Length: 361
Image (cartoon, rainbow, N blue to C red; front, side, top):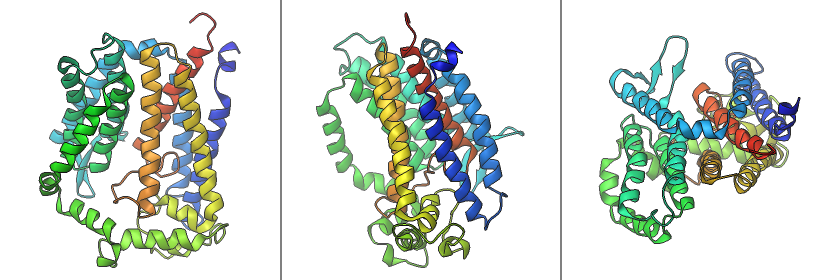
């Protein structure tokens, strides 16, 4: 009972609420049927919630001890994807293990934050910006991000880089280095543009002006905007979405599920999702501020920022404020690897919050 009392049950209830709402949306997206998405979504969530609660019992010191091992295992998985990975939808991102199909790049979002948090925990104060510390940290980010880019998966590569860079900044790396890197990145834009795949370039061009190809590459975002706009304040009503039920909205159960929701539930549904995740993000920041030690603080903030990146990019993408990069909406979109990653993320932060409540930890 003492262990149960230390669990952040309020956050657990918010998480259940978001996943439950996702199940309702998937039920509607399938035309009022539990199959093929809603039932699997609910079962996966129950399993992963139990896993997250189990992870929360593990001491953060244990994760610090095995951070390099976790990072190395996921890196091997990324290399395995390049060698024997399964191709689906034109991308080679999955490892088929028979009973489950895993996407190692999803887990690297967490592993890179964990290993960098450990790296800076043991780094002497004042050494953060020295080359001997800077280049290894950048390599820990660049190697997996490059492997993910080869799949190709620009959205996940950016997510890995974002989480890693946030940890570096919070650890004390000087701001002028990030500004210098940003200027260098802008100068290298022509080179980066030439390295993008044709479909990635098209996504950027469509983001700038969707009307240039409304029936082709711009179709996704145009239909998404129509669905969101037609929902208004309170939506068209449960099971009454037209863009989704008449198959105008592509990927209505994964990347564009927020648009599916907004058409039927309107602004009220959107505020429910944003408010729920706002509570989780705020809790993550508070947990980091109360954390004991550099590792726990950086891990909690890095994971919270990774979750924020998920949310911001997905919602901006479906509203036409960012290019389409294939990042799902956590807990709401259909998909096993993405949900597993987010539940592990929440479990890790819960473990830090629980550790903060121990009397003599």
